Image 1 (cartoon, rainbow, N blue to C red):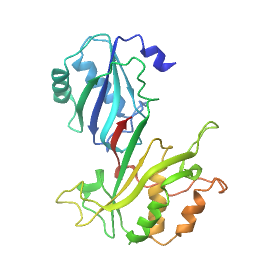
Image 2: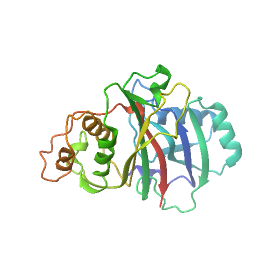
Image 3: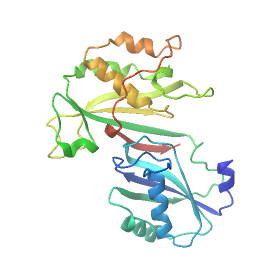
Length: 266
């Protein structure tokens, strides 16, 4: 129904953005807190002045989660100049938000919610000592010692099609827990660097077509428990079976380490 109501607009654009999520409470608009959607609409309202518009995001994100690339669809009654619009938006947007690209969607059937897309998430972390406070918005420092090699083995167990009921919070009766993870690995971090980062840090890279609420943060949480030797590899294997106890896992990794790294529409 929501998408049908947007079809009254003559034109739509696929907009790619980057943002630092540390001060935002996710994408969805909420009362008394600043969301990414609210900030985008506020900036667009200033840039587009009296032009009527609507925006629709490609999916929800958690509080404090950042994005190297996130997409939303912009609906308008008239065409706009891509270069002028991008320059105007970036000049008026806060420093933690930036438009990367703007593409006119020629096919009226394009639906940013239902269109098939592959998402790649990264979770950046270190271990063994408390990090410099400046790193807090991008990198989570687990102060316990972690067995990284064991965590790498654990990450591979998530690849393929599994039952992720234990890796989801607040599901509905219609929630489909069977999800396919295209790849899941832990690498040494060479992507995000800064002189206030620890000498060595790591990144969990997860790629798939659809994720449940808090799924990746719960996956990271169980890998941290594995790295502490609090659980075993067989525990993770059992947690992914449809015959498990279905009780959600308790350890949710902090949102600040999570980043939506890429979105690819097929």
